[in-house]
Length: 125
Length: 125
Length: 125
Image (cartoon, rainbow over all chains, first blue to last red; front, side, top):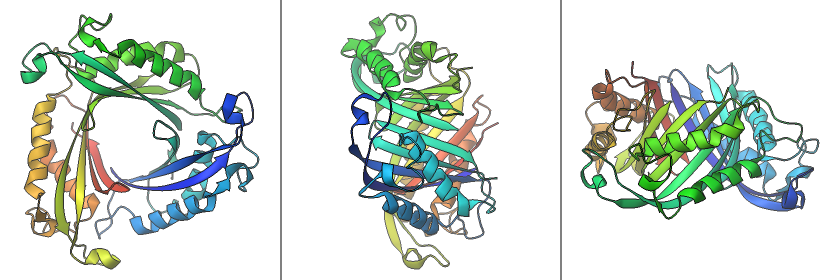
């Protein structure tokens, strides 16, 4: 099995709704998004998937949340913007063009700090 | 599948028993403990599990080994204090309150340096 | 399940053949190689596998590519030196002496920069 990994950063505000202590106040993080793509076979050119293309998609997605309040980003307004929910949102956005490419699975990790992340991993089949 | 991750540090002495060269002398490390919790479903509040609660358990466990000789910590006196054994010890301590919460698996990684770790991963079911 | 991890660095030149934009020019990276070994059971001395022995193998392999052009390294001259192909090459080199030792699987990650890697993971059985 092969995998490729790319990462990007974005700085965003958010607040949680519910019993989350100080995290219920609007605050923010320097988020780090890590994206891992898995598959069984390499292409003839020695790649699993075009990492430039993947990197562009990841940078584009990070850019769409950069210097924004996540609670106001379309697709996140109806959910609690936990790192888990942001990972699920990013997973759906990135998975769409990756389906039907013979790839196995996709992981998206959302780091809120160097000591905490949440991730979603699921099959692309 | 979702996962959440928290990390903590502790500084401890230890020595290995057996044919371990200089590691048979009492020495020490700035240990880093990384803890990953996995499950299939998010709670209604958008979390897999209360990361504050997990963080407290991890910090408490790290604190119980901080500035100690691991060879004298109850639960580690009977084993060789390899990173594998410390990971297994921490896994058991952390797993106990996590069982029966609908979670899938738990990983504990014990870094002895930025270039080496050992980990234990097992099902919580 | 247990795992152990060691890492090493090497600085090497390479060029890709094909439609890879500026990566088709000879350039180079400070590569980081991360190696993860997995198995079900610890030895009586509390180790999964002798991490000193694994570390020596990883350092030796990294050293054999250090300050070289990967496109001229025997075993890599016939392939496109993508990070995927370098990971596959290193996997084969490291796996050989690890088979038949009761271990489950081996992962080799090749980082070309702190923001991108490719990895190969496969069973050792």
